Length: 290
Length: 327
Picture 1 (cartoon, rainbow over the protein chains, first blue to last red):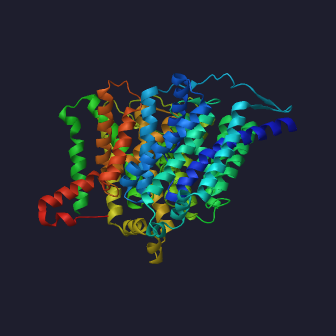
Picture 2: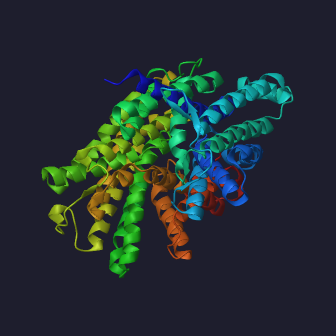
Picture 3: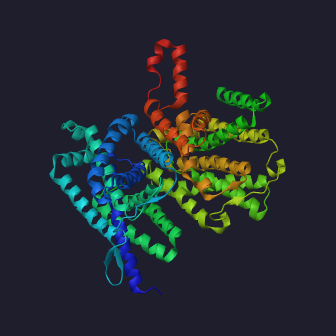
């Protein structure tokens, strides 16, 4: 039998990891909620942001947590430009084309990174990476604790933006009724690009939170994004609270299933949950309809 | 009968290639291009004619490959029988995945996601299960006899994959002319309207996925016979899911010859990219593929076949050229 202490530790660790998952899922769900497509380039963008955070520290000596201030706006612009000048024009408003274009972008970004940096795995040795808070029954690593808090701050900021600013209102209007929003004078192409930019900025923040305690290689983002897909489906596509709660739940499920089943089978647990949710309740636990 | 004639002409012309004294390098290039074309032809039945874009056709390719390899190596089954069972395995996976997803009404983004997830589950399972050689993979014994489905010369393999491609081309041609094909296209164009007119959309899509899975699995079976090795990354990796959808999209979705044309072009581009950098460029070929995918979707949504037919009608009927095929 496992002692309650080990179980509690696994749950707490799962919650900490789950928060970062939630942030990645938040970006995905935001884009889905407005554009109604799954952004298959999300993982590649995460990897790119992780490389950016890595080199910001290695070459310029910028701490990953400070790099958030630079990388979030930079990746917002990248996301904006991708949607406005590549994905939007290339897909002619057809959903299937949009999927293909984001897939194509994912292939390009991932392999350009592979070409530039090879398959080597890189890690940062930060002085505070191993420090943390001892709760008695478990030890909370500082980077993951900071990550947990940051995710909630970011979510709150995003929620405020969505509910209190004109841009936020415009985004919600486009998500609900695109044609009506267009008739009311909202520039839909611009709002699409802003949303895509916000989703990409989420990924950049997540990358900065991950890099102190994780590694980066040209595939690093994929593992997270497959989990993020699961979260988004579980929480309901387009639902922000769904992404948050889903992220925390998946973090705990993963932590517990790798405790009981081992690392690689733990991953299968997530996929099976994913397929099961899709088949049984594709609208997710919090979504209104598919 | 014009369509079948075209298939025959193309296949016969390609069958003569080994007599032209081409090098083994060229023949090897053509064999791989044909194998990718076969995988793409499978994708094209479901994605091109049925409009269901799968991002996980590796599930079929890998299953075909593993069934062939495991039956031969572990159970001593005859290579030809194992090949047939590999194809049946792909069809079965198609029936399972199609039955589950289409009955739950998954479309578009959701369908792409769930196929991707199935391929990933199979990849992880095959990387830990002992029967698939876990992380090490499976080696098939070298036995260069046609009875073992292995050939002394490259030409033997070339004709074999060409024969498989010919079968797939014929199957596609039959689908295109059949009532089933019309229903399938109706489902692609407007599923709700098709269903309202009495087409059993779910059943049609599941059947398309079974045929699609069988064809793509055949490419996986051939992979094992040609390279005599398979592991989880090769069998269920994303590379084959991407190439299977890339070839028909570049060549022309929902056309008989699209995947074949697309595979030749894609492979030539990838090869060219590697050649320029002297082969020391991991990932560069895929960067090229990704760019081509975005460019084709953006500028020639009907692929190279679409471009060709537009060119032809412009040459034959210059006055009407403006009106040709839109949407």
